[in-house]
Structure formats: C-alpha cells, structure tokens
Length: 109
Image (tube, rainbow, N blue to C red; front, side, top):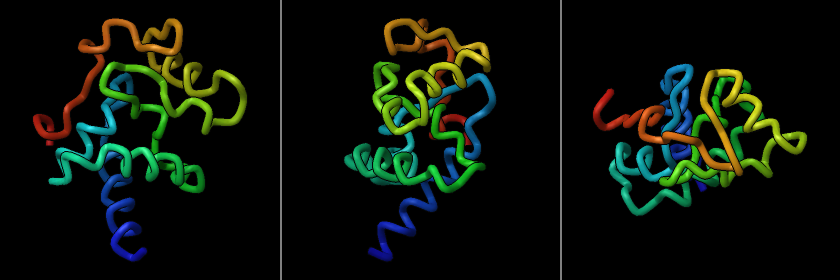
C-alpha cells in the first residue's frame, strides 16, 4: 500500500500544477510519471483526493475530455460548474474544443 500512497502523492503534485483554465487527462499524468499504463491508478488517486482541498481534481478528465469522475463530486454538476467557472465550456459531460484547454505535463514541466 505504501507504493500506492507514494504514487498518489506524485499524482497530486502534478495535479496541483495544472493551470487555472486548463485540464489534463489521467493518461497524461500517468505517462508523465513514467507509468503510462496506469491511467486507472491516476483515476483512483483523483477519487481519493477529496480530503485534499488543494488538489484541483476537477481539472483531470479522460483522454477525450469526458468528465468521467464527475460522480465523485458533491452535487450533481459540481465538476462541470467548477470547470465552467474557469472558462472551460462543457456540453453533455464533455469539454468542448478539448485540445484548446489541454495541458500536457510532459511538455509543460
């Protein structure tokens, strides 16, 4: 379990760097951390980030810009509301013009 905790903390460290008004994907974070096949583990980390108010989990979506983690947020549309408050357009649970808002940690860090 300790290895998972360390991995989760590394995921949180990357998530904290996602700029306001940008999003990234579970896979992009996994790839950046040298664990390209661990996108699902990044998802588990984001699911467990609720106790960490400084982790902007709403900025992490799937590779197609779909808000797959939205059911882990309180309220029915909190994830979407948080993204829209940053100027990111969402329609039918998917970020519109995803490529315009995508932040790739491998290129940016």
